[in-house]
Length: 141
Image (cartoon, rainbow, N blue to C red):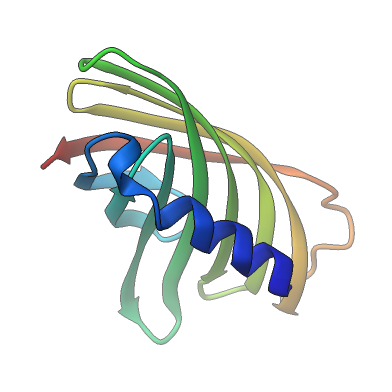
């Protein structure tokens, strides 16, 4: 765990490698159906937090560590890892998996697959992997 924290710290201590960007937006999809999103990109690596709290029985939060491999100022393509926790009326669980992100100006799309890593309520015994999907609007500051 200390090595992971050290690697992430090194990545984000060198924002001078390119100009840092902040993204804000809203999307539909996992983890809470309607999500607010906030991201920080100091260089080719970025962090994004998305989710929403509606009430104690309907909420979710997803954290992404992302590597941007293409950015021409209009289109952005990246790969990342998503770690999330989601709760609704019938279940309460966490998941982890790879994601692909595509942004064209303000249009945002995230596709991925995930594996449940912790189930606190609900039956996930027959679910090995499942799709992650987000679509919405992202604005770059």
